[in-house]
Image 1: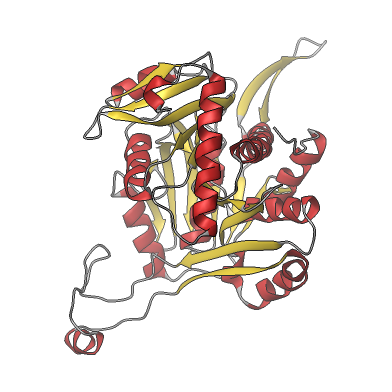
Image 2: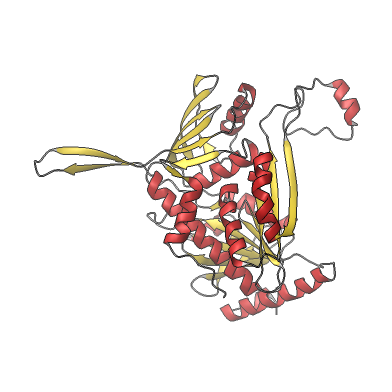
Length: 415
């Protein structure tokens, strides 16, 4: 069966189930002939906003959605591919999911260009703080004898390392020793990336101790949920999930579980953070204006240097496609503080920022997507301070996530 001939949900799930089982057999043999199933988790709009027509978003990008039922589509890539490249499912409101079997060299850049092309979509941004809560669920749902996998990634991207070379330039084939002689080295950029694979009970014991010693271990960029059968599901910080199990239904059940957690945490964060003005009238006929909402505060574990701070501001607000997906004109209060009355490029909703060498304070007016908070925290942990402490008003960010799971009764349910 090919994607072209699929016309029902059952045929779709049977197709993906068969494909996944074949790929797992190839993994066990140490070779895969083509790409694994990858799922890209997307964000549309807050619940108070009318959801955009997903078909129109794809059409504007030169692609096409062919409906299978009310929530499932075949995806036609009308670019150089000019063929079906996967499926889109509205797994839960607010979060469509794109399933594809293409090679990552094809689908990763395509998703990046697609999301960047429209303000109506964003990716899921799973910060290290969210991963910490998901890791607790991995511990809870699995035997301590199973193997877990965590990847940590941190690069102080905004540190100035080499004076004569811009951040996008390449040294090429020049030997480093020769290059070092021809340039003035200011300082090297701090960077860490490594994976930890160990029995879950061992990682549970030693990871907190290691994080106390080495702060980049707070910047988790990838986590594997062990499958209920064989293999697992690799969740990445930018919303991509790779299926390395032998079951697509198990993969889909894990996606649904994480999306429910993410959606609940986002909605709770929005309700806490959104600023709004409400007028009230007492029995005495006196009118008052009440301010609702709380600032999002991100405190750095140590102050940034002035050079690093300046490069961060310049790189973020002088570039259209910056890592933080923000727009605005910095108002410089001093060399260590700027104010931004700007907008989030996802939905073009307003956001007010105070950026300093010691902290970030963000104010989100009602309607600004809570995903903005996750994106800010994720990118700060990856590129500025892996041990940043985050709170919304008097509530800690990770406690909001944990509370959302408990209060909403979110549980893993096999498909």
